[in-house]
Image (cartoon, rainbow, N blue to C red; front, side, top):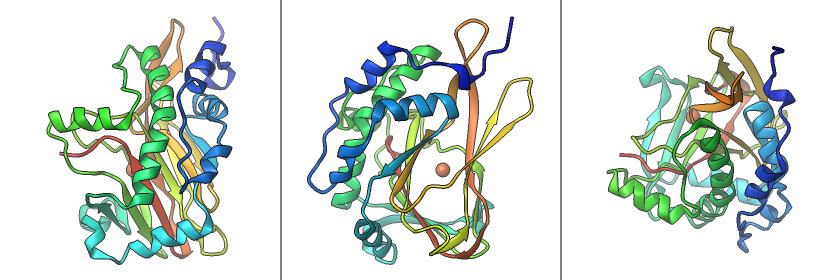
Length: 260
Ligand SMILES: [Fe+2]
């Protein structure tokens, strides 16, 4: 039997309908969401293991989120990555209530991503996720996961993020979104987004993404389905950031499940 790679897997029509069928709301503060082709992103996610969106935030909105980074009252905790050997840089988790823009993004991005997550869940025989974020957060609360997980990350020259997965409790929504808040080559150099897929009984595959200002990367929290001889199998994916050579790189991370 010939080996079928993920690249050769077509997006089935019923899969597209599942994604397109999600009610994608475009709130007034996020007009750029109207330009997102979710079915195309779902296909890209299947083919590559990650998907690059068009800009979701304007340059002004990116600057607005960057400006939050030094406001202590906006965050519940701060992690200096070197202290945990996670890398070099720091990140801050937003406190509740979330900043309106962050909350609008998390709430609006969730339904189409739930469509993508449920398509993957069906392939892997995993649980389904509810169509609305509020329902997921209620489930998180019942599981003891109360703390909000959206965060802003900042890397300076020499900064990097080791390959990792983001798991914050037993209840894990399988996809997350990272939005780049700076302009590559102008505000910083280096600092590519890196993904490594650990394929069973094969050597690992590395992939690199270079989002532009305001663009989002949709990627798995820990694994994804790839075609197997019969059906699909699960492959682990870790993500990280290569070394920033100069300047500063800020990212807004939207994780959908809450943390313990
Ligand atoms: Fe991460």
